[in-house]
Image 1 (tube, rainbow, N blue to C red):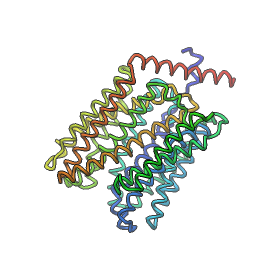
Image 2 (cartoon, one colour):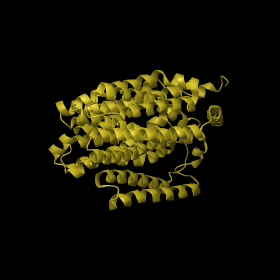
Image 3 (cartoon, rainbow, N blue to C red):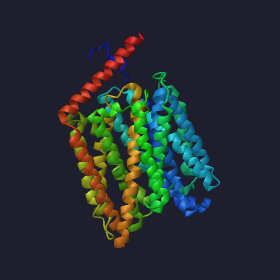
Image 4 (cartoon, one colour):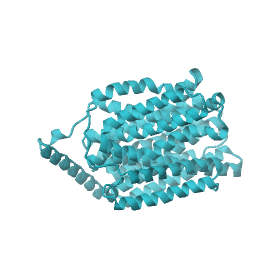
Length: 486
């Protein structure tokens, strides 16, 4: 690359990357922080047992279903603008959550929180990818992003226990306000405003179809866990999700300006990366969920100690993602590093599958957590790099929304499936540990499916050549755009 072309690829200031990752941290923190406080919330607000799950599901429903729309809107309307809008909406909803006087008020506020998060996450990720040059700079930034995601999810479990115990459940929502206030103050000063990428309008029909389809899927999975997958409401919701998804695909193939350009999936690297993220989402959600249940219900540990028990795995993800993954990626490439990471995840799940009623944290839990965390730290940033490399700057928000939506949908589907199977196994054996162990065994199978996908879709030399070609095309596109502007 000539010296004349290099300046057009801007490196963000460290402070800009820190703000982007801080926004993601808040979202992940809020996703997990509420779980520990649910019993207290139920008691103080008078929740019916059947309605309590909507405190969690309401957030997940709007977050997961609006991600693609949020990503596309950021591409068309401006990513920084949508990031600020999403954070403002998230903060207002956090305030009403913290002041909620009834179950309905809290649930509706959680719906709005999820909508704000759906605008923040893809906008933040696309700002990261568009302000970091493809290659070492972007790979490092994506590794830090994934480390932040893991840290926020684990910190939520710990913070939820501490805040609920000492300040009350309302504090788990109100704690967002000072953090977001600082972000809203600094973002306009640190992150440059990005211009609209074109006059193209949002594909309203496509946006409506994909949003309602995703919402029906998440609702159906949640309903299935609560009422059984044979219940009428569950069957109707899941059927509607499939039908609307099919209609969405048909509509998008005939629309001049589609919500989802299917040309993205013409790349084997993109297909394999998004597929791997989908399956990893299932394993990531389940291993934290079932480990927490095992620690509390089988080993008898408190919620606070359960949260603290996740610190070693969180530290493993943060340190490995930040300091090792990028260097290993440069040496090994997408396919090899993905397979190594997935293998470690699989071994970790096998270890956890041997948990017993008379087990211990040090023997039955910690080694499996560390192996799984190490695999996640290697595989998830690598898949993120593969999913965003070579994507046109005008569609980075959509790619970010697709990446996050894949992980969220994988989490929802995987957790619903594994929780159902664990409950059935527990009913058969009368042992909670046996049910949890069986869920990890099934999770191992999910990891194997991801490995087969990566192994069959990707050829190492072809993959590296494609990444290099995509990078060069992306650089040339930006060069041409600058020359045209000049």
